[in-house]
Amino acid sequence: MLPHAYELPAAVLFVLAGALTCFAGYRLFRVVLALYGFILGAMFASSMMGVTNSVGMVIAAVVGGIVGAAILVFAYFIGIALVGAGLGALVAHLAWPHIGAGDPPATLLIVLAIAGAIGAMLLQRYVIVVATAFAGAWTIIVGALVIAGDRGAARAASDGVWILYPLTPAPGKGWVPIAWIALGLIGTAVQLGITATKRTM
Image (cartoon, rainbow, N blue to C red; front, side):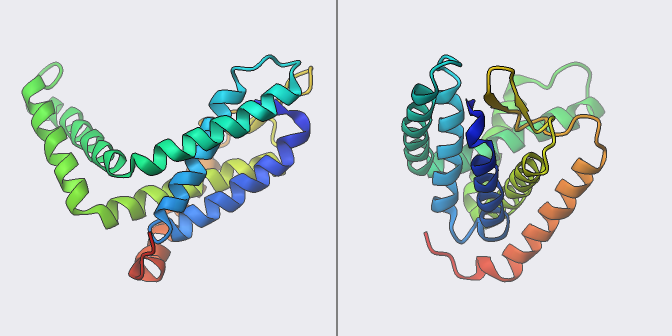
C-alpha cells in the first residue's frame, strides 16, 4: 500500500513494465526480473507500515523494492527451476485422477517435479517467453484498470491509502481473463517471432 497520490504513477509504471515484459521479456529477462522484484518488494514492505505514516510507506517501498529486485535477479536460475518443478507437480495433480483415486503419491510428485525442473532448464527460452508474456499481459491489464479508475483494481481506503489487488483486479468482469489470454498469446508470438531471436542478458 502507498499514499493515494502515488496511485496513478504506480499504475503507469505497471503498464510500462507490463508492456516491456509482455513483448520483450525474454530478451530483457534480467531487467524484467529486477522490475517485478522491485514491484513485489515495494508492495510487501510498504504494507508493513502504518497507514498514517506516508513517508515511512514511501521509504519502505523504495528499500523493499531494491531488496526485491536484487533477490529476483540473483535467483534467476532457481526461479526457472522452480517454475519447471511447479509445472511438473501440476501435471501430476491433473493426470492422477485419471489413473487412481485420491492424491498422487509423493514419489510421483517428486519425480515429475524434478523432471519439470530439468525440462525448464533445458527449455529456458520457451519457459521464459511464455511466463513473461502472460505475466506482462496481466500487469498491463491491472495497470490499465487502475488508470481507468476501476475500484476493483485499486481501492483507496478512507484514510487516503492506495491498496493494490493484483490478483483480483476486476471481480465480476468476464472479459478480463479473455483479454489476458489474448494479450499473453500476442506477447508470446511477438517474442518468439521478433524479440527472442537476440537475447541480451
